Image (cartoon, rainbow, N blue to C red):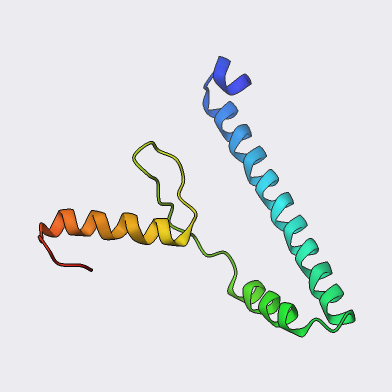
Length: 100
């Protein structure tokens, strides 16, 4: 609220520091939860989930592209994403009668 009321450089720096600390806190919490889940999978001999979890943990953060429909809603179903991309590229390429 201080930044909104008075956007001075000191308030901007304070806000930036608070956001950085919050991001660091939640990143550490996520790492702890992931390691606990990996340990649980190891103890229960659930090796498939263990190896997938190790692979994801080692890979780190991977940004995902967001696909939205015409209304602006996020499309998460794979077939809907593929259909949207197919329609988009067929309109761009202006190809009639060709199925991609």
